[in-house]
Amino acid sequence: MMRVWKGHLYARLDEIMLMLGAELVFFAVGELMFTLVAKTQGLDGSVIPIGTLCALMAAVTIAVFMGIGVLPVHFNMAVSMGITRNRFIPVFLLVSFAENLAAAGVAFLFSFPETWVLRAVYAGVKLESFTGYVFQWKYILTACLGLAALHVFFGMLLMRLGKIAWTVLWLLWMACAVGGPGLVRLAESMQETAFGKLCAAVLDMVRGFTESGILAGIVIASVVMIAASWGMLYRQEVKM
Image 1 (cartoon, one colour):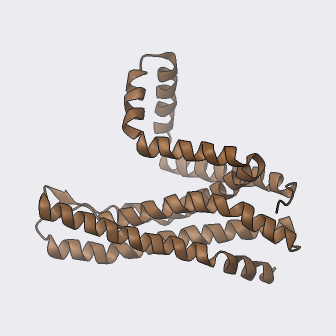
Image 2 (cartoon, helix red, strand yellow):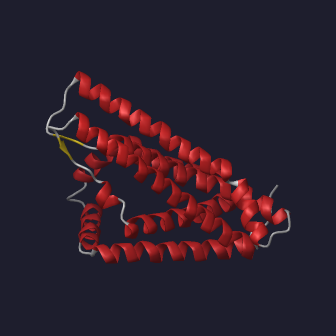
Image 3 (tube, one colour):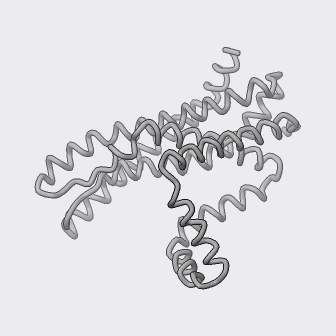
């Protein structure tokens, strides 16, 4: 079992380094953007640690797409080398979980020098820091588990459905990222329709959940996705 751990961790080392490197790059980009805005337009009201936010967003984006895309590669390689599915699947999940946790830890570490610099340079401006709220163990561990479950679930769909699953996921992501304002206007225009009222009822029900209930729901959904993926991958054939 230890051989499987070491081999899989070594195989995904470049993936981990890419994610951490991307966090560093996006952190620097966020700092540069903030500096340019502060120099050209000035500061009004308050500031936020934009570099940490950019690093965290980069980590989540890469974790979603790269984590999904690497499952077929590592699954086919591991099973073809004689590693059983019962050993590979938990190792893949735990390495994905640890990878997500490391990415969150790096973003958290970035927040310390950024907060110090903002307080020193912009002493008269209010600092609205979100790190103390976001970087809590109950949120981070739940998010890391959810991302690891998404890795194996959508990776399994990618193996079963091929490019169709990847295309659908990409379109959904781009619709949310690029067409956000359009989706908001569409939702507002549909408020009086039956579908709009149904969506509003669902949102009202979700708002009624407590924080503990939402976290528990994410954990349950993650377990369901992992269980479904495990069952499908157990019967999945190797494709080289």
